[in-house]
Amino acid sequence: MLKEKVFRMLTRIFLPSLAKNMEEEGTFKVFEGENAISNEDDYFRIEDRGADVTVVIFSGLDVLYAGEPRFEMRRQLAGLGHSTNLVFVRDLRRLGYHVSPGGQPDGLDYYTRKLCEIMERLGAKHHVALGASLGGSAAFYFGKRCGMDHVIAFSPAFPFTVWMGWSPLLRALVDVKKLLNRPMDYMEVVLVALSANLIWHVGHKNLPGLRPWDVLDTFENSPGNRPQSTIFFGECCGPDARQAELVRNRLPEVKLVPVPTGRHNCPGYLKEQGRLASVLQEEIRSVLRDRGFAIGATSAPQDSPVVETGASSVPEHG
Image 1: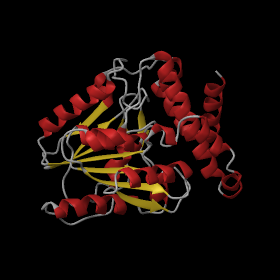
Image 2: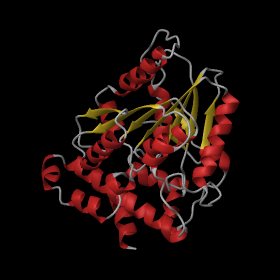
Image 3: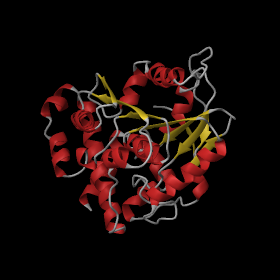
């Protein structure tokens, strides 16, 4: 298929670390309706520190992070000033959590059930859902369904129409101004639009009954209180700016924080500016203070370690 070949070629040229990671994990096989990783244990990493706060970190398609942002956030949270349990949730099939590890199209219910079990086992009083891109969508969706207290999303990708379909892809391709002035931002947006279309096409091809989640409707109408929520987004990234405007109209209580970049990889930009840790920590600290949690001395994040992903060892980076 042409789109698959183009995606592979562009990934290997412009994002070689992603291509290498996907080759090692076997996740290029998602384009053939397969995946080399089906062991449930590889989809979750749990760090139980006996804390009264749990942060649940959702990976996205990982197109811009080579599959690593789930562990990068450990470093960014190191100076929070309050102990936290950490739960890293991986979507190794890269189908937006719609497919369970065994390959069945019951992923949304599967992850909801598993997360509720994990939250109950850890026993924290306060739960934070955190993610970027499609992981940000997951933070909103599961944050509400699982009764979490606080959602932080960087450039979430909902509704799907913001990134998927021919219209967003064509808009990205014909953005000549960005191509001339910010060529790397241009390539990033084109790659995200292309990969979103491709991966969802593969999902439909292999699971014809697959239907995308309605994150906005779930957040608005599912039972329980809405979590306090914040979205950080690149104000010069067309799809993300449109997504923020849709949220503004539907969910006016959500705090929107524009970031001066044309990139979809908003946390990557903030990290390059040396601001990601402070922005993320202060967002969490402010809510914890409001809810009566004690905040101790804070410190700068330490150098990043090498962590085990379950399929390979990879250094953390944004």
